Length: 178
Image (cartoon, rainbow, N blue to C red; front, side, top):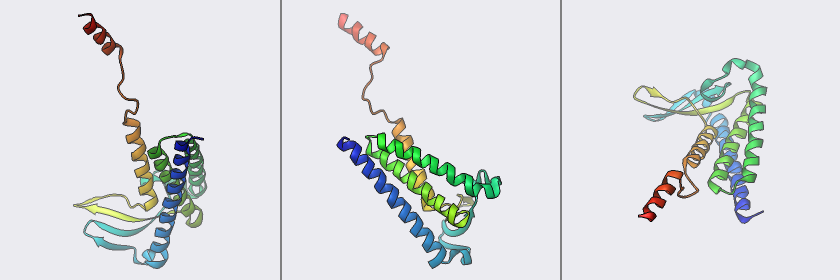
C-alpha cells in the first residue's frame, strides 16, 4: 500500500469517527441536557432556532409513507451504502475524496443509530429568514451534504492537466508547416 493510500484510509476513518462522535454527542445534549423535546423550539438568533423534529422519513421527508418498515429499510440501505463508500475509500488516493467519504459515512451511521434507537432521526437545527425556512436538520445531515458537495466539486475538477484534442493537434501541426 502506498503512502497516499494509507493517508486516505486514515483520513477517511478519522472523519468517519469525528463526524459520528460530534453527531451523537450533539443529539444526546439536545435530548437530555437541553431538553428540547419538552421545549419544542428555542430561538437562538433571528434566523436560527433549535426545533425538535423526529424525522421518520429520509431527506426532506421523502418516503415517509413507509411507516414502520422505514425503521428497518432505511438503516439497511444506509449501511449498504456505507460499505460501498468504505470500499471507495480503500481504493482512492485522493485525500479530499477520502475525507468527504468519511464524513458521509459518519453522518449516515449517526442517523442509522438514531433510527435503531429512537425509531426516527433526531433533527433540531432550523434555519429561516424573511418567510423562507430550510427543513430542520442535524449535524449528520450537514456532514453528508458537505461531503457530497466536495465529491461533486472534485468530479467537476479536471485533475489530468491540459488535454490535446484532435482539433488542437491538427491546428498545432498546421502552424508548424507554415
